[in-house]
Length: 54
Image (cartoon, rainbow, N blue to C red):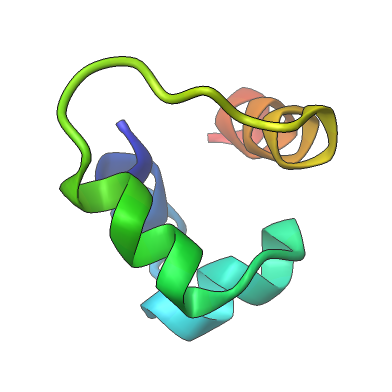
């Protein structure tokens, strides 16, 4: 889901990470992790907001 959302936004990993205020390494790890992610509230809310906009 994270990779799909990032692609819909047309962002690089670094740009997407900046949007949701995490590191690019974190975005890469999320994209490589199968199944559900266990996220902190701030990144979760940022992802939900971006998903709502797309």
